[in-house]
Image (cartoon, rainbow, N blue to C red; front, side, top):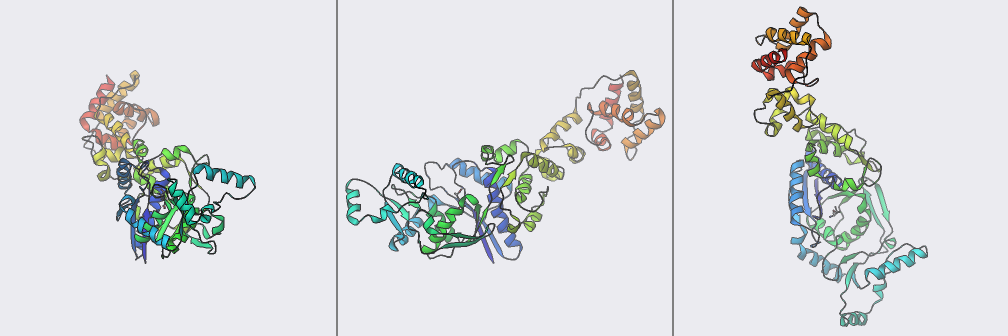
Length: 448
Ligand code: GLU
């Protein structure tokens, strides 16, 4: 079995967490198909028919974001390169009488809708333009008017599909407006190019947000009018802020802001893979494990709630699993493997490692020690023995015996003298990272 999915952003802005999630799920669907013995492809389609609002910098940004997230694509198409294909499909629809010319202005349509709503009727396009004769069109042309084009829905052909998330779907085409597919200036609206591309790119599965459900109803008839079998459709519930509504903030939350906040791509992927599904969100860095467990049938119909606190929690747990090889380029110069593993359990984000490395390399600020503690630290400097297998436990063991100190009074002055801090990484590991010379120097300095 072949599964070809696509992610089809309009390059009119940066990707936000909602469309990152859509991209991710399409990627999972394709990768999972590959896993289970079929062939799977994940395509990027740039929906840039809106020349005025589309910008090249956003196209570049979308590619960079997908790469950062580790969502490799198997091909890329751009709608602006494919205008001839839409023209050809349009001619087909024209020849079969499935498109028609209309002239109403936005204001006229708005007024019609208001009248309908006032009468308690659904605000559906009344097909007024279908009544125009050739003579009427000629008269319009003589006035210099250019028509826009609508797709003629077949009211006798009920629309149904089995939705991968929502289950069986039924639409009465008579309850839908014939959509405008082409503007008076010849430019395309979303509906037709998308269907043409899905056909010609061999898309088998269209997975997108539930805000597209009514578009799907129209496109099902478009596929059929173009002689194609519609792909499988699945519409996922939208992502909401934790306060439970579509939040503006989510719309501006993208990879750049995640990166600035120290969020790892694996954390976003782990969270968004399962948010809104019946599977638990877990800090799973193993992409393969996420692919294996990805399952559309676990997706719920209720909106998925995105909470920054969840993301931070998953992120921290992911950071605690990161191997030195993966992060080494992002660590300060000189910070080695032992140092990374010593501080890793104390990090919220990778960048915090630099703070601990600064403490290792010094200089550090010391607190005021009591006379008693200074004498104790002098004793510690003498007892320090790096020939021991575990210098920290050897040191604290010896000091405990010699001084009778225990607990906080045994450990805290040592930690403070060695790091300037009251808390932090495991001292047994950190002491090895500091090394004998630095450790002794710090203890001596604190003692004096
Ligand atoms: N460009 C459309 C969007 O971003 C694509 C929708 C689709 O997946 O067909 O909403």
